[in-house]
Length: 81
Image 1 (cartoon, rainbow, N blue to C red):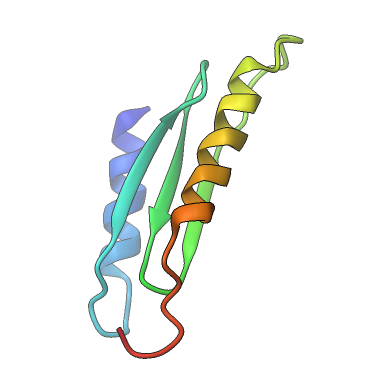
Image 2 (image 1 turned 60 degrees about the vertical axis):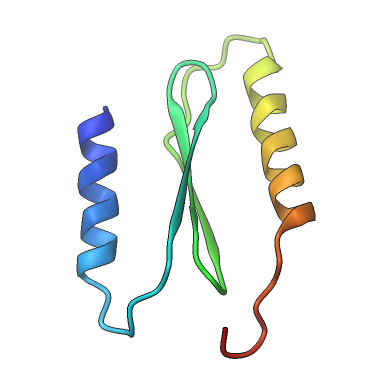
């Protein structure tokens, strides 16, 4: 599973035709799998493959808490950074 995440990340970075951007990658443990948060200067992308529903919302709540904390502290770049 980690291999496809790395391949996806490298593909996104190499296929970009715009000026190079700084990127931060967050691997978020959500139980059965990981979610990936790609953070760019002016955007953020969440990749979550989902998983089986176990009836326990602990992992879901962990992801929501992580994303809420991330966006609450994120500095938004509105002009050239």
